[in-house]
Amino acid sequence: MRRVQVVGIGLGDPGQLTLDAVEALGGVDVVVLLHKPGPADELTAIRSAIVERFAPQARVVERDDAVRDRASADYEGATERWRDERAALYEQTLLDEVPDGGSCGLLVWGDPAIYDGTVEMLHRLDARGRVALDWRVVPGLGAPSVLAAAHRTTLTRTARAATITPARRVLDDSVDSGEADLVVMLDGSKAHGLEHLPDDATVYWGAYVGTGDEVLISGRVGDVREEILAARVEHRERKGWLMDTYLVRRA
Image (cartoon, helix red, strand yellow):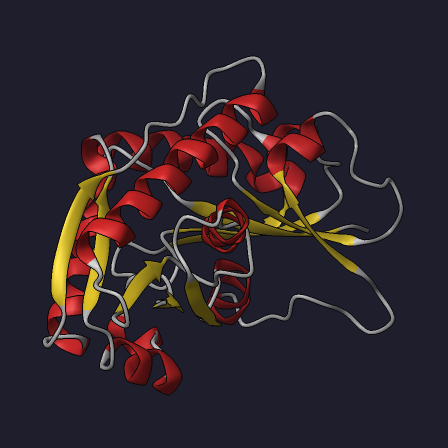
């Protein structure tokens, strides 16, 4: 039996770790870090700094992450293949690097409960049955809550619903057309969900929220849309990667 702690670490600022997260990291034997290709490996460097500070007792195991085909026309199929490859990678790493009875920490950006495949991946490992796991999830501060705090607003309004959605569901109009506000995540380099929003909505946009690189823009969609799209291009070129989220208040 191997114990696994899936730890939400917030968005890069060590101050965003909860006390539960600090305690969990301080008790693991091994931490697995996956390196991403290109400039986005900056996220791995941030994780390394968190491990050095909060899990000095742990042995760090580094692996290259599985490569995800984001340009595939079969988006869901490509995502499933990537998750299978990642599950196999974690499975073999746990068998090779974590002794029976040992414990392992997996550091998840933001909150593991929001748009992260680690929880689903561990369910797959359980189902495969090659490695016996006892695992728990430690929640973290996710991008939606940090975004709302940065803009000094709330995710919900009185008697109004809010829907968390990937940008592609805005693009293909599969998000309900009712009055629910939207929290839009995973807006890729070409999938500008903002282009499909009504001009009279209000948007609260943020990139790299909760970090020293934080960029915030808000206002009527028709007034700030081009400013946000230009900012996305500028900061992606500057850093080589972009992580942004936005809240849309529909009129």
